[in-house]
Image (cartoon, rainbow, N blue to C red; front, side, top):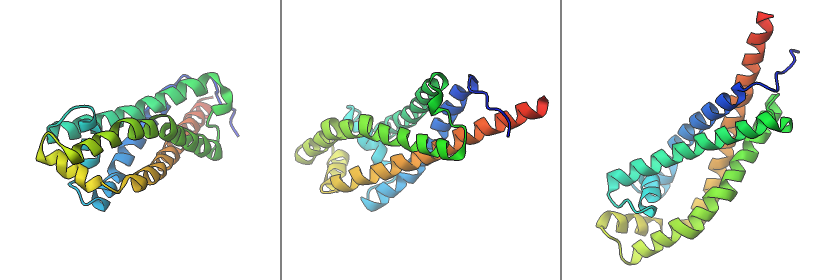
Length: 185
């Protein structure tokens, strides 16, 4: 078994890349939310964008999607920085990669998703159900009425899947780097 390089600054790059890929994967899976809620594809991202004040349907979807990808990427980068300096988080094997990835995903759910949903997104949807700036937003708010518990619980599952994908990618990239480094020696 090759000795792992725990000081590798590549870990930040690997973690950022893994966060980016994982966020893309989850964004693809979020189509399920649109199917369950019987809304047009991209509605989940439009909800994010409209909650920030972008009321144009096309613009709000792109803003929401971009923020979703950026959040997953930045979360991966932060994990890499912390793991670089706190060796206990180093994804040196499959189990550690997956475990710490799941911890990252659940942490994102607790620290970011729940507060944003409880304090910003759901109140905006409730307000739009009463009086929306346009018919598109009224339709979105109407579709999401009663789905709040499903969205919150389902999002936990999506965050766990994000963590599993993230942990696998980071572990595998660290492992491959170490195999290549061992072969060079």
